[in-house]
Image 1 (cartoon, rainbow, N blue to C red):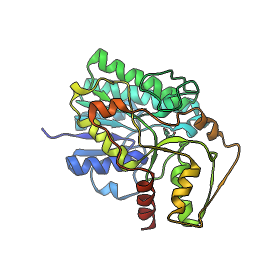
Image 2: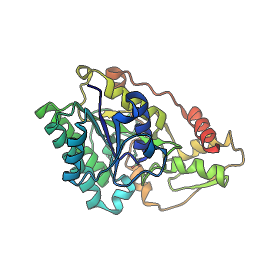
Image 3: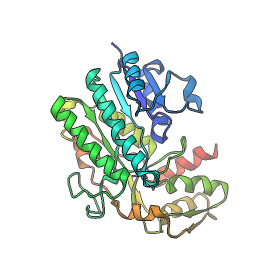
Image 4: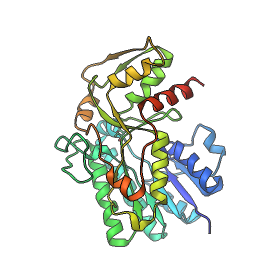
Length: 314
Ligand code: VAH
């Protein structure tokens, strides 16, 4: 029987590209894009789409009943900055959305479930450099708290009920296809658009704010690589540390200047996202992902910058 895949939250920054990648691998008709609003891009006529609100268990159940999915990717969430503006909704969506999917995956015997975590699970007292897979985790954003709790639930459903749920702690993701939504790392996407449009950008994070980042091509490839890995190789059922490249706004601007010499980067002060960024690691140790499912990033800062600018210029 061929795979049938649900991607919940398919309109988001990750979902947009993950649906396309999965459809090229599994066939368009076998990958159902699901979101609370219809996509406004080519995806809508490239395969099945369903209106799904992951907090509406009846709608969710009907979609599981209709497709009997062999894999489910739950990407619907409020990110860090938006979550701080709407803490209760962020907790409700990020937590109850996950629990609804985990329960239905058990009922419908879904073979594999994917759920993204984030470096936001680390907090002010986590080690900042080469943050290890296991360490103090005291997130102080609702987003980070919900991702840490979600990791605990994923591991619980695996250990207690044998559900094959897999997860990755994504760093800040950089892509040109779909806009990011309400994240603290979004400056690293906006800067490219502004550099091309205006030749300048005002960063809401300070010059020396170093954060773990990754090009979306690497993130999508790594996600599918984890999902294809033999279950017996995986010892982490909370969520894998996952690293691409770490940089500061200053370092990123210097790389952009190699392509746009007159580019000017300035800084705005007192943005609430600075406090969030300061609570996160500067770099991540992803040796478990490397050892257990062969993860290696392909895009360094130079390659990512060149690819972003080339695609945005089109
Ligand atoms: C955010 N882009 O900024 C997300 C991500 C590590 C950052 O979780 O909230």
